[in-house]
Image 1 (cartoon, helix red, strand yellow):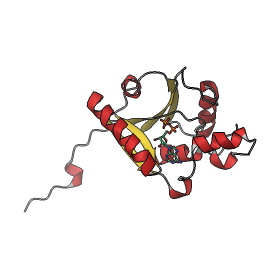
Image 2 (tube, rainbow, N blue to C red):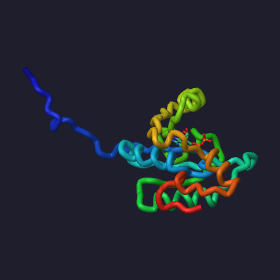
Image 3 (cartoon, protein in one colour):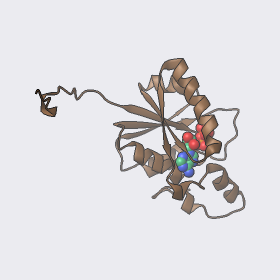
Image 4 (cartoon, rainbow, N blue to C red):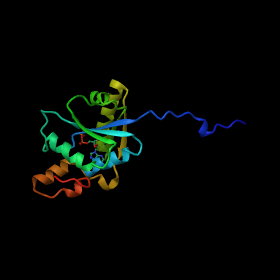
Length: 165
Ligand code: ADP
């Protein structure tokens, strides 16, 4: 009988898996942070892409969102942060990413994520990798954070460690 030992396998070490993590991040929450941290266990590099659309009103400017995310990942060289105002797949291609990373909280998120993932794959072949949220973060959303801020409430429990508004 012939055995194939793992040591005989030629594994090229030049292949790199880069994902984009696109979103509005208005603001970037601990739920988003957790998805990126977990994604780093299987992606070599993650480019966080802040979707920016002049027609869409946001509470935080792109500069502020960029600054907050930079604070969160100051310690992590494998995370890059950029803003973009193109189609998400075009952004992925422009940074040579081969995956899109997204997070899923509920069945409410599911249909939306599936539609976008299907469209992105048809357009470019880029696959979407979806992580279920950690259940302790399933209630965390940018919408609720913005709502609380509007009423002058403290949202520090919604934010990643080391991030101040
Ligand atoms: P978008 O406007 O593209 O939906 P968001 O900033 O709302 O952007 O979210 C970006 C991604 O993060 C989405 O995949 C969303 O489902 C995911 N996400 C948002 N909040 C959480 C959370 N608490 N846990 C896990 N994933 C989340």
